[in-house]
Image (cartoon, rainbow, N blue to C red; front, side, top):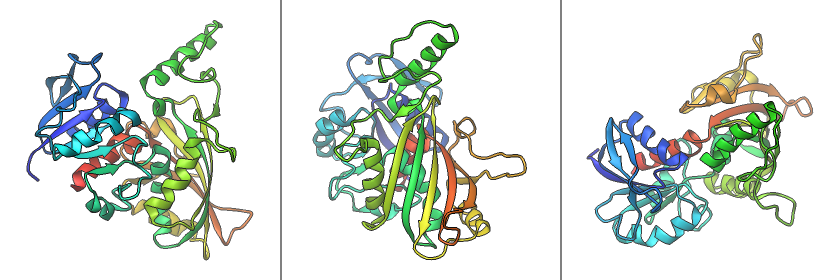
Length: 333
């Protein structure tokens, strides 16, 4: 692959920093790297492959001569800059929710639907982190055994809300330990030693936006409008790796536990962590910093043992849930 000129929009944010790390670790053929952010962050220096790169203020002309732009600057910024990016002949890989459900815009997990990326019209959307991590555990089984229904409960890390939420988790935890009052600013409730419903708007049916993303994005990625998804999304006091408990109901008979473990172990981007003797299963601490999603607690659903399995998965929200998946999409191009 020839060297590419790559731009990172939102370079100083949590995902932007991970974009640089992933590009380096995957040895992505970067000829030139442009770091773009708000005027407030312009002038900062960030390291890439041992060299300092100065962050530039993002403007409509920033994408001239750029081949691929990795965006993680929020939906409003993506919408504002999409036309400028595409008019410059640059492909946008967008990490926000701006274009995920737009007809004609591919929504891609490279291990699952890489062929969709080829149909892009300039923009490719990166799915929601919870959706990516869930499907990395489900798809290896679904490929051979069609799935009727997923019931998923998420345990979501602070990183999904950015650096500010991660710092608030640390500070609120210190406040509890020091028996000091703490007023949350980024999150709606105190984060230390607490958990609460995902901090997105609740719709008329009682589901928050994060839950509805999992429902809608799953159908689009799998090209399957019939698959049912029943989600409950919860913020937990973890820094950067999401975990999910998933009940998988199959259309026919469920695979055996042994077959399920083998299908999972053979799938790229998945590592089975399933040691019953040591009670060792996927944990956010062990998933943090890892490219692979960790899957375990593979067991029959006792309420319908012939039809359903339970699994537990943990994946780094900033990596497979965001930056890694986006760079893998760029690699498909």
